[in-house]
Image 1 (cartoon, helix red, strand yellow):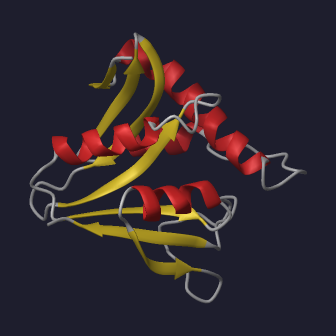
Image 2 (cartoon, rainbow, N blue to C red):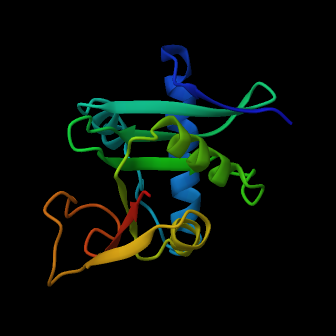
Length: 168
């Protein structure tokens, strides 16, 4: 097995988006049996890809895309943001997410802190970020403490955890 984390190429964007949407949809569907909305609209991925400092990566094993990530790098503050990290549906629990994250950390060694958010219902994500990647939950968004950057129409939009990882 040969793992690589490569910059996302224009010809891979549609597969990247489709796979990411399927991974997010499947995760949410496991928590909400009556789910009839799209969890991750393409416009949200496009918005992330177009941010200043955005970098997108595809995770490839033996020539096949198995996941990916979008990070936003702030060169001036060195406080960077993980917008999205996904592992393709059907290949979870093989350490791919950890390989993606470890490679990103190595790629940005000057980072002072990483930040990300995840919905309260994504137990796998919470486990992954805290127990596998070393993040700490630093804030809980809810109806009495809203994050103005999270749209109200987002599934779980009122309930999110913000994670941070201060680098040594």
